[in-house]
Image 1 (cartoon, helix red, strand yellow):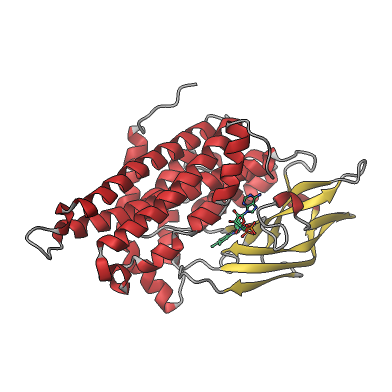
Image 2 (cartoon, protein in one colour; image 1 turned 45 degrees about the vertical axis):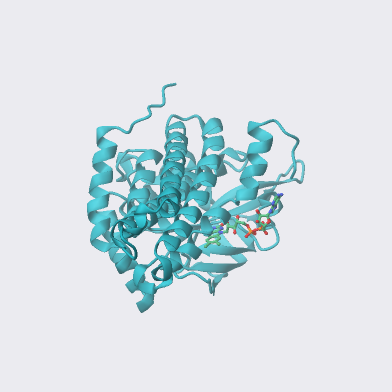
Length: 387
Ligand SMILES: Cc1cc2nc3c(=O)[nH]c(=O)nc-3n(C[C@H](O)[C@H](O)[C@H](O)COP(=O)(O)OP(=O)(O)OC[C@H]3O[C@@H](n4cnc5c(N)ncnc54)[C@H](O)[C@@H]3O)c2cc1C
């Protein structure tokens, strides 16, 4: 298989179109919406109208017929313009990919056109309070009762439930023969009786919010099950690998935004004879960020190209490494950008202080830095399993 090092003309044109639109909004718009306690719905709808949200969804379901490389490029450009959309990581990337690859024709007809246009927002819930990174320990279960499934459990840190129409819940069903629990995915409308959610206040401000979710005897029809009950983990990873690639895209975009601002400042701020960018103590950290950012972007593009080529196994390895590299570079770039700005780095006007905290998310979610290092140590290096 050939994985090219440069992006196609179409991909580059897509980047330019996204950049042009996202720049009309930018960080000032995001900050203002947050200040007013409002969502970034205008931006989301505009992205939907331009076909950016559903660029990876097949054309027959109203999408752009592209791949994860295209969707990741969209989110990276939005982030670089200062206006990333967190729910793009979830709705078209995780849920859209799982439905496209594992859904029935009816499920695809029902959900994909809305997800592609952005009119339907889908959330995703795997994390549980007592399982955390160890998702083999999740206890949310689904029991068959006649024509319905009955779900019970608890989830935590689920993004965007207040704006989502439906949530894909990772649950477990009992194997009739062995009694063992196996993963199963259910699409549950967010207004389903028995599904409650509670906002978790966070120490960084963003338009998207996180929630604790309580699932008490939630009944869904038989066709709410997505994929084969005995299909195994690959169905879940059909969404988790895109999530990691999009996590990398979002953090690379964030890092580009921070680097651009810092370079601009270093070229203009003058407190001695020359601008501060003359001092290597300012210039070298910026140059280092540039190099590490390009490394992270290459990993992200490689992971997406592998996923789009259908090589799930290798895509998994690169999606993890890309997510790690993206998380690191977002944190480092924000740190360097704040330092370059001196006191202004923490002034709200410059829009960097809040992002310094927000960038930490890239080291924690959707899979933590430590769990990626565990994975790479074991799968890429053949070291003993540590978890
Ligand atoms: C803003 C935000 C949005 C989120 N959105 C969603 C969402 O939409 N849907 C969803 O399902 N989840 C979501 N999450 C949850 C996220 O995926 C988890 O927070 C993440 O997977 C880590 O799990 P945890 O918080 O339980 O940490 P823990 O698993 O408790 O880990 C705590 C620390 O211990 C380390 N650790 C754990 N096990 C090991 C080990 N074996 N070896 C080495 N170190 C280890 C971790 O790396 C971490 O540093 C979100 C989280 C945040 C903060």
